[in-house]
Each structure stands twice: as C-alpha cells, then as structure tokens.
Image (cartoon, rainbow, N blue to C red; front, side, top):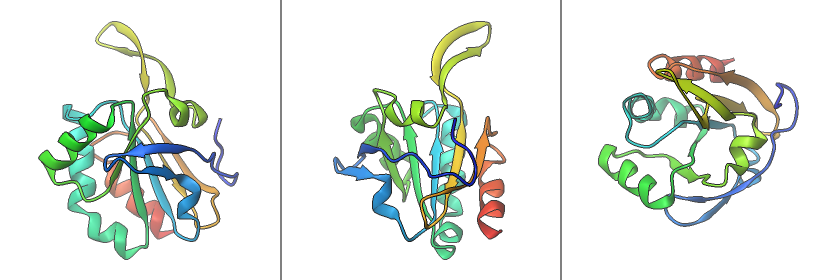
Length: 152
C-alpha cells in the first residue's frame, strides 16, 4: 500500500501519444497521478473535464497531471480528442501501476462484482515522494480537493 511520505512506486506506461512515460521522468516537479476506471464514462468524463477546466491552476502550481486507466492508447486518444484534454493519459491494461498503487481490485457496482480501479489520486512531490494519497475520490469534488492539497 502506498503511504504518504514514502517514495512513489515508479512505473513505465504508454501514453496517449504512443510514448513510453516513466514517473521518475518528472522528478523536480510535483505530479498529480490520478487513477480512473474507464474512458468516456459519466464520472470519468466529469473528472477529466474538471481537470481540463482548471488546468491553468495546475500549471501555475508547476504540477504535471497524469491520468491512468486500464484502457488502451487508442481509447485514450479518442477520449482526449473528444474532450480536448490538455494532460497526458497513460494506458495500464496489465494493471502494473494500478496494482503498485493499491487501486486495482474487486469492486461492486449496482449489485455486480468485477475487477477494476478505485478512483484515487496521489500527489507526488518534486523529490518523488507521495505527499498526499486520496482514495475513493468523488469525481465531482476531485479537482478542488487536489488543488487545495497542491497549495499546502
């Protein structure tokens, strides 16, 4: 389980542009690493569009935003383009990063059990340590809580 004050697990995933992205590539600046269940679903769209709408605030605070889901790169490209998302989406179809951060597992929704991601966000400081772990976040209040945490 990822803990605040501890080093963030490094990973390497393919981005929506087809590039390999390593978390450690962003040392020296804060990273907002957010895990979401699926591209182009109501909650995930709300969450992504709220980040898009406040993206200038994230940039002003020097933060890189990385969204991670099990969707593949092609789904990420469609999602990014449809909603004009200005940040990087990472494909985690093998659940490598999701498992490392403890957000992949059994979920229940409308009486059905399945394997998936618990919507969660980790703020990683410029030294590569987790400064804030937010698990089970709500899509509609996510952005304001992340920006508040970045301000501290």
